[in-house]
Length: 140
Image 1 (cartoon, rainbow, N blue to C red):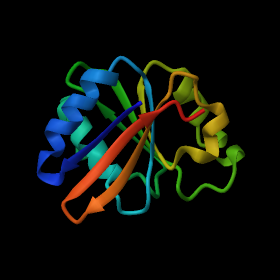
Image 2 (cartoon, one colour):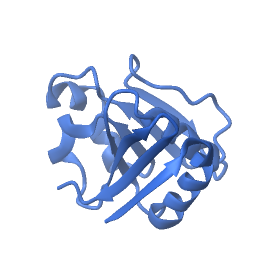
Image 3 (cartoon, rainbow, N blue to C red):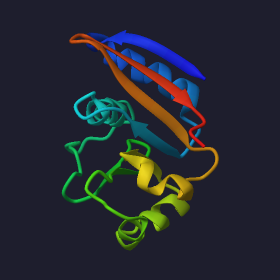
Image 4 (cartoon, rainbow, N blue to C red):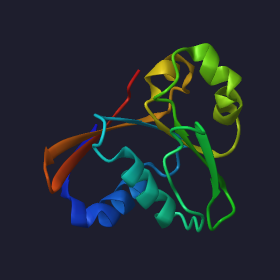
């Protein structure tokens, strides 16, 4: 398990460190309280990967699709509003998890049992107004 504390002005550096450690994986599940910075982390990660489209929370659309500079598909999912696994599967989440793209999932608990065993589980926490922590665990 990796755990680190960082200043918000060092987010890009922290995300780059994270990607060096875990970037060979395909599915990333982000947990943490509302407002902790899950979408901000994903925005920084997409920037690192060369996404030129606007990266925003897919709270209402559920899924945003981006493409990296290397032309790899990146799917940003926000499952906060879903109330059942069936809703997630009807939205196409299963197909995305089985595909070749990178899946960045906010509020993943509703599909926890559907995620592959090598999913990277990232928990973000507030330390102070200018500091956050992140830790990676197996999540299973």
